[in-house]
Image (tube, rainbow, N blue to C red; front, side, top):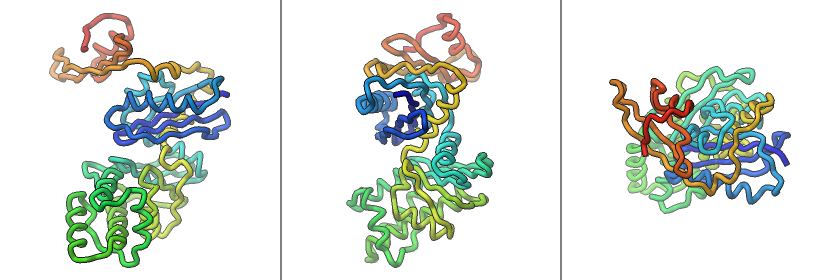
Amino acid sequence: MKGYLGIDVGSVSTNIVFMDENNNILESLYLRTNGQPVATVQSGLKQIKEKLPANTMVRGVGTTGSGRQLTGVVVGSDAIKNEITAHAIAASHLVPGVQTILEIGGQDSKIIILRNGVVTDFAMNTVCAAGTGSFLDQQASRLNISIEEFGDISLQGRNPVRIAGRCAVFAESDMIHKQQMGYNLDDILAGLCEALVRNYLNNVGKGKEILGPVVFQGGVAANAGMKKAFERALGLEVRIPKYFNVMGAVGAALLAKDVTAKGIPTSFKGFGIADLEYKAGSIECNGCPNLCEVIEMTEQGKIIARWGDRCGKWSNALSTGEVVGNLS
């Protein structure tokens, strides 16, 4: 069997998919990053390998997400792309003709506008985490319900409570106030979903022309209450693709296939990297007033990558074999 790996490393989750040569997703993993991106990727690769036939050949690897550069160095990525590109590619593949992508992950949210299959506009949330997966997890925990129950309970609400959703702190304070006033839990949760959708559309989606087909992806798309709230606010059907929670990884795999289809051999180091030791360190370079933070990654004690310097003093030295210094 031959295929392609896609890896999406975010602050909250790490997602890995294996796609065959016909673009069919054969295996997918959704893992918690837990602040250890490299260790999580190694664990994920072990799990993927165990599920695939022994004769599986990886023809290409793509990485995306906030940890795409780090992960790309570790696994030997053929395509390292930003989340906007990866999510747009995946949505266009799974929902042909999509014109609007609503994506809400663990700590960020974004909107991507496509016309005729091309990204024409996008926006991401700024400093506030209101409406992201982490905020919903926190509220579910405070209310002593599982995040899996959140959406189904909210669907039972018949009179959604008006909740301030522009700020995570104010939203939580308003929820507590409504509880103390005696409102039903299902109406509070339904109201919270509507508040978060208002916040998303008034901030991330502000000024954007939202046209169908509309796709909702990211971990929060599992919340049925959020889907319903989006449909009520937009007056449009909101579609949730089969692999909604690993779309970044799907896009990364497709991008890797595009690169290696040109005859370029893969740089993938093999599943054996799951058993190697990796360490990262950093220094502040004082060679000029920029004071760049230079990151160094070692594999089994050997330096394999440096990045972060604006002038290339450290990263270029590594590629040419010149010894400039050791950051470990």
